Image 1 (cartoon, one colour):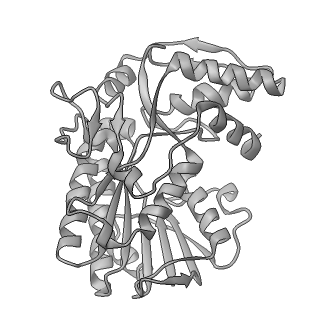
Image 2 (spheres, one colour):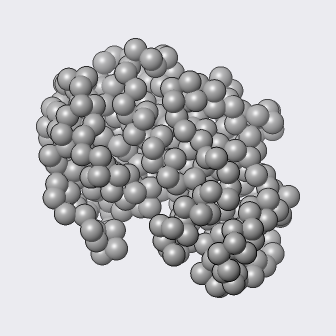
Length: 328
């Protein structure tokens, strides 16, 4: 079978690709495990680091997800599964509305239409976000039954794509499922334009011995999920038989809520254990970032996802340990 990962040049997409190469198979359109003989990693641009260590059956393709013909040329086999992760992120979406619509909405529809054209009911996993929730009426704990009221362009485009996944699945154009991601941490490399980038930076920069500038107050709480379990959630959601899914194919991934105080305390505990000298965490409030983050849920009820066997983290400390083992 063939697998396509859009947004594969990003951290999660790249980690997913590496795990799929190690795994070697997925549940195909037959409903049984099938060998992955072609894995396409697609993104606008990809670094050499993204490509390193990934040989056969991986192929890298760079291009514009809004290019319909290109997307159709990638999704060119009936025995195919697609992980659609490509997206303009939250902060960038607020700054550039048209780009967010072009990439997130038009690009998403290109992927969905290409899968529909196969006429083989392929499995599609769409990376959504808890940014679909927001607003003054948002409850303190959101669940999959909470009415989505996104307060960012990013959240709006994610919800619109969720609705398309539901409808395309209802009409049996493809077999879709949406993963509502909380903030995923700890991401290596440089900060990106996501408003939640600081949630990785508050660990990553100090561990690398450099200062971290914190744009939100330390009492800020947010639901977190470690990168290893985020990747595992994508795969398990893909593998779930459609008979176990409800009419609403959007599932909030498991997470645990922590404040910045708790995150920094966990960092310090693990660093002390490993005798790592940390860089400083400096408070540098950014009203734009704080405003965006304040619209997001501070806790989630992911009971539907947990019922499907989606994993959660054991502890903050364990995710820090994982990051040290994988990237330091």
